[in-house]
Length: 216
Image (cartoon, rainbow, N blue to C red):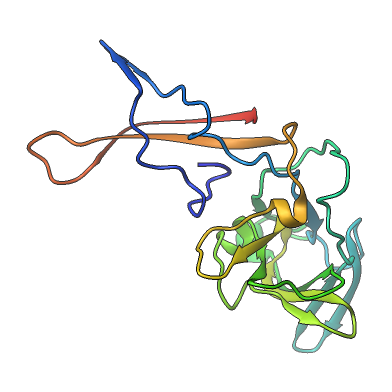
């Protein structure tokens, strides 16, 4: 798995070589992933001032709206290194000592500038902030007036990574290369899960796992 995504996980890989306690999975193509791009980010640990990618914060009697800076498609841009957290988030606020209890909620508004609506699929806000789910809550809608896709998430204060994902009709996995680009230099987290099914058992047993960070 890449960045703990289940939608594009590679499974049913059998070892191509077995010797004693060595299982060799050194495939050429079958176990490779898109490199993708470093994640986008925003910081709402404070709702009193706008941080780098926050355009404005509007407070109402019944809640708070956070409007992020409009994003651009990155598939044509050169790779730029960034110290991201590989799609994760951290719940935290600067005005309290117990973020799980003290942190407030806000409606966070996303905008991805795009000349025309896409065909044969939809665009979603993706990352741990949406649990990598592609549904009506994470799907963006096209705004003809803005010439952009827009979406809103109800999030707790914290520091967030995210990206935009294209999901083709009649598929269940996301393709980030359309919108974010695809670079071999990108650093990602990977999980390897090893399952084994004994002859007398009807289910797979998880017998080993390992996490590591690497370039593609």
